[in-house]
Length: 346
Image 1 (cartoon, helix red, strand yellow):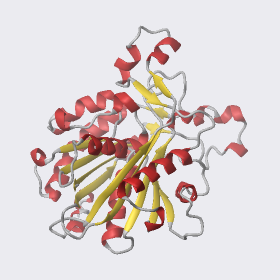
Image 2 (spheres, rainbow, N blue to C red):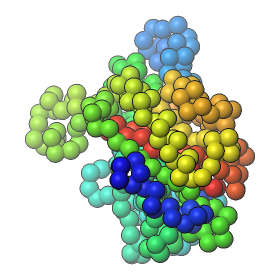
Image 3 (cartoon, rainbow, N blue to C red):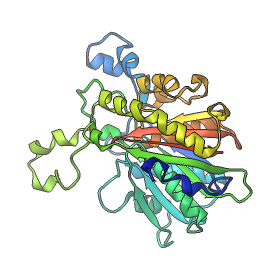
Image 4 (cartoon, rainbow, N blue to C red):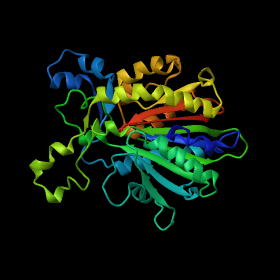
């Protein structure tokens, strides 16, 4: 069995995995940074930075704002939208790549932020960098279908601005801070389902996107500050990421469509990871999909790492571009290099 076929047996149910996204919620820091700020910093003509990265503005947290605040606020908004109290949750999962600290898991801090101390509700993290939300959505769907959980809070909260090199003209203006939450629950009436999902990783691109500090190689207590400064900055080789993604993503997309039993023209809404202006502009041609059906919020929020996909999903739902019963596709790439796609009946 090829690795790309291994997921097909998981979708033996003709109607897919019986789950639905019950509600969504988002949160951003109060401080909005326009791209003209970078133009002035680097003495560029007005509009140069926005044209280069596709971002007109992004939100950035100041030093006093913790990721827990954004995560909790997004979660509370999702719970309010669903008409639920936090105690109705069976599990809390943080899906992201920039946790507030190494230990404990960020999901435990979200549980505390929701006032659920003493509840015993299980909380844990899942990290697949920019694909964290999509991977967590798939894995938790199986757990819900198996009866392990009934209702799960899935939160992606990212503060990438904390790890950006302020002198890097490619990465510094591309990213924005923010959080997005979804409530995933069992759906037995067939109205909503996860129809198919798949992920592939090509580790020949493992060095194309990295943040070396914070792990066991560059632990701050063991090195002089000067030795860890460079490792503390996020680094990305956009060309290398694009080459690997362009080589493998179209075939993965075709396989997921086949597993889902749908045609690309039946999908009403495509929700991609908001990687960059170039990536979003190339996507329609790469996958042969209509640009009008692609959700693009990059210009207003920047690349929010794992939070960008659920943030874009929230925008699609609130704008009416993604409605209950619609077929939607989640598409993303991330460090690794990994890529993933899921097709849902919303």
